[in-house]
Figure 1 (cartoon, rainbow, N blue to C red):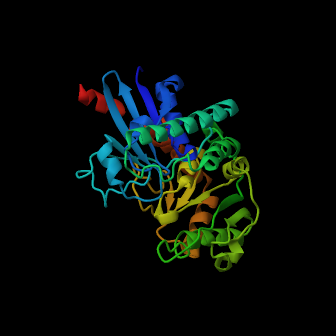
Figure 2: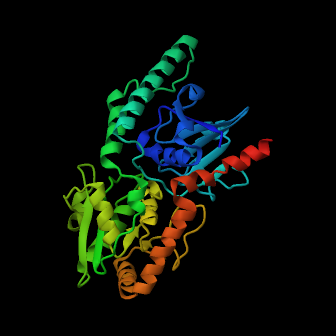
Length: 364
């Protein structure tokens, strides 16, 4: 393809890495470049990613919403030609009123760059951002669009690149299969802070804790994991589910591959969360509570996932024992979760689902 891609140089690299991989796979690494100049008059980027696809004299502007909220950012919706969203909610934003909106499978941070590329792009993109700030001063653009820019957050900028290299792994690490241990259940997750707005103690924290407590009570089940808490979370409410063991991502992936099943539930602000995407990539038998937001295609109970309608301990126990006692059913869930991932979830498929090429054809 002869298209060129320009990605905003201020992209938060852990949140943008998934889509950078997809763009590189489709258009070629040499055609994927970073710059801030085409995005100068836009609002702050936060955790999201925006880029422009250029084909000769035509261009398509793309914004991908990767943060927890299902809401649409009006300024970016007006700016872009395609609005990808990992937490699209068509009940709140119906497609007939928001035709640019595209639902995506939740992404997660992956390692794209080797060490030398990490150093190169971290320095290059920081310098590009500084140049853009100078340009703004020259042209006296009066907008608060760099409140969170890397010029004021140099340390955070470099840490984002460094941590993504040191702590994350390639997409292939997820996709490589490993043997399942028939009586092993591994689940390690976050105990989120809770307040009057997110009410996580009543929601995601309670659901995850119930799953852990049930696993611990099942006879002959070898359970490993727990909830990781910090000083801001209600640790005392979930003390029986807390673990202090900090594990590497590579260990988490390997143990999750070995786990006979996994548990998914809407996370912070009832978003899909990274884990849903990771579990699909790993091809796991997924027990899940109902999802709050939409996907490119629904996950079907008994085919892609095992859906439970409530998160009571009794319901969770019934779902776990059913999967443990029906290996053929489990393997079918594993196979179809992976098929769903390959059809809708990979970095390449996520970019293809945006419909960039089709939109170019309509511009002719």
